[in-house]
Length: 170
Image (cartoon, rainbow, N blue to C red):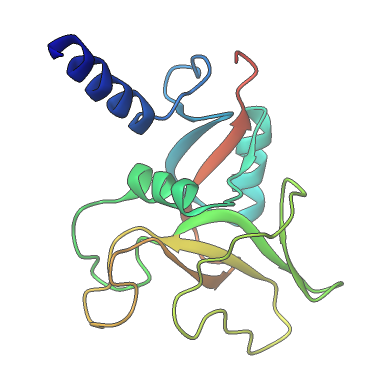
């Protein structure tokens, strides 16, 4: 009986721990079958994507709440920003003005969206890019309550970013 209980508890805990299917490179975090890395340098969108591609990756595309939570966890500061705009993190979603569609840099389908209330806001013909807000808003009680929602920003805004690549070691 005791052995059965220990086995059952072990199986539950094993199920709760995500399998990375192999090791990611040092500094990268796994969520099968991908590896993720937060870069804290603040750059514009094209520079961020360039750094990602130099690392055999793309700016992160997000396709589930679990993946969104991982990106939030990798980038959360744990403090209220001086302003709501200070700590937005670049992700790989951009508004394609040629197609009028939100598109991921890695070409994957836009199957999951986590916009903050009222977002995105497209008020002119400028190119817009999505950004994840890892920390909850400090001055709006109903806006981005838990952190992790997205907003759109312009390219001249320099931001930290997250890259994502396939884990080839699985």
